[in-house]
Length: 207
Image 1: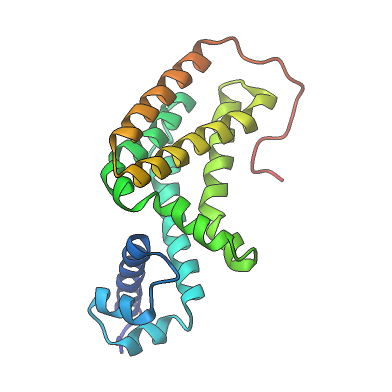
Image 2: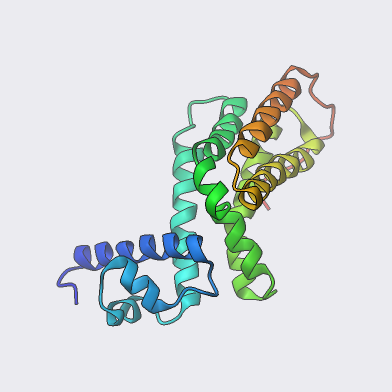
């Protein structure tokens, strides 16, 4: 077992990275703790030391995914304007188009699989998706879209998820390229359009 907190954190992170990859490749239900141990090149006992169940691993995967999204969409775009931030989200899909065509969107595929359980684990799987919706809504509000913002955010996120789903079904990354091009044009049109006139409303994420 690790001899220091730093070594323990490193070993745990290695397991979460391996679990993220394997579950994305073959699905949550088909993946065993032994599969994760093999992918991480550690003994099975090491997996049980850090994670008692696969459900614990799902939470850890989402924690890591949330850290990534906050880093790439919040911290890295802090100095950007709302349009540039939304374009950064689109770029995530363009960058990962080949992987998504092979295995689907890692966020959407896990959410889709676990949502069928309609319980705590299903709610957990949807956490990154909810973050994307709330984050996108906040950007549209900054663009002056007011009460339209939740619907615009939903359209954007569902378009990205749908593009990944169809690209995966056809094993064709060009689907993502075409749909993200259309989404980028749609976003440019929104920015050029006159801001919606709405009543004052609390910012997204403040509830």
